[in-house]
Each structure stands twice: as structure tokens, then as C-alpha cells.
Length: 130
Image 1 (cartoon, rainbow, N blue to C red):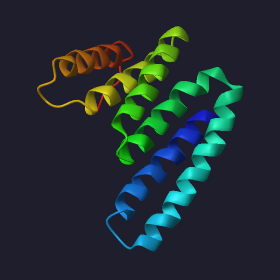
Image 2 (image 1 turned 135 degrees about the vertical axis):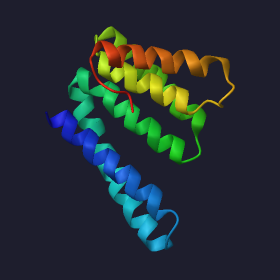
Image 3 (image 1 turned 90 degrees about the vertical axis):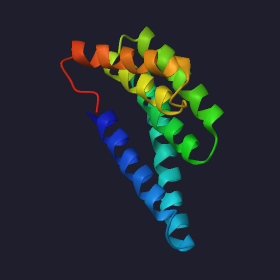
């Protein structure tokens, strides 16, 4: 349950930082500072618990993508995808497939496969992938 809390707080801070980037620089820096602190704490927690690592890498990938580092984000997500599959974590696998697809152009040949695979997993889990 603690991993869900870390993920949720990190997601909220990512969204807050993304919104703040359109406003005053002071607010942007303040939110970025909070986000970086949260990512460090989350990383320490993930080091001790292998099942937390895919979720941490998913969130760190989003951070890297927002920092205009899409290749680094993709590497984090692909690494996390391997972990999620190895650890048999289908929900995380579906989220990572969706994140990977989100970074691809609409006409990229891999995008449809990634989204389809994500949706198939979510359906098997009886969850919506939206």
C-alpha cells in the first residue's frame, strides 16, 4: 500500500510541476524541488522492494519525458517493463506499455501494438486503460 502512496504523490507532483511550468518561475522551481525530493525518497524505497521498482521507473520516466529527455524516459520504461514481466506484475506492465506508446508518433508502427497489448492486459484484469 505504501508503494501506491508513493506513486500517487509522485503523479500529483508531476502534474503540479507540469502546470506550474506555464506560470511564474518561482512557483515552477518550488514544485520541481518538491518533485525531486519525492523522487529521491521513492527511489530509496524502490531499492529495498523489487516490486516497487517498476512503478518508480514509470514515474521517473514521466519526469524525464517532461524534462525533454524522451530517450532516457524510454530506457526507464523499457527497463521497468522487463522487471514488471519478470515479477509478473500485469497492471504495471500495461501502464508501461501505455507510457511507451504515448511517446511515439501516431503513425509509428509499434504504437498500435503497444496500446493493443496494454488494453488486452487491462481487459484481462477487468480494468479500463484510460
